[in-house]
Image (tube, rainbow, N blue to C red):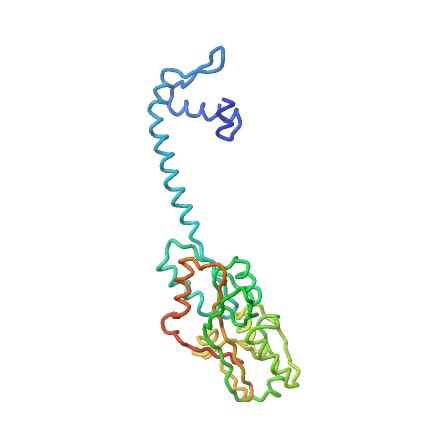
Length: 281
């Protein structure tokens, strides 16, 4: 009993209790005590004979399906994205990828560009899309799309006086680049709120708390519904490029190569598309 408990990783009393329950279910005595311990009864020996091939089959099933489970778990692809790509086209591409790779577990990690680059360098993320780059020598950078802030119809001086709702607190990113350029031209910014998500920016703007600066593809549906509109600012010119990044030294897995092909092609209807980073009111 004690040895059986050790092999099963349970206590000796638990082993005895399980045998007792088995006897009650079968309504037979499976073993009896003797001077040196216990021995199987005639019914116990018959039970063991009949159970042996069943137990072998159970072990075989465990080996087969635990191997398949291990193979399935081994197919893991972690994709990273800075906030704008993660909010716009990366989820769409992920859904397309899952349709063609049902046995691959896909994880999408979102953060600022600098942190996503670090995750790729540390091999915690295999492939990613960012909107700004630190030009690490350990990474490969491929242009993904170009996001342009076009000429608008509101002066920089007027824009500087208007309350602004800003996405994120960092010094990098498309919105941060626009704000930095405004400050470099000698204007003070009137930032009234920092938001952690694009949805929070849109909600604040809709409540007339100020103007927001977001990628146009993040607000396109809101513009079409009439919930938001574009405010034009002449003299404000800059662009933010998006880059596909992956490690130089480590070859991409087959799943990552397939995802890279999707990124290069783009989802249906978005190939070679451009998004505008504009103030939206």
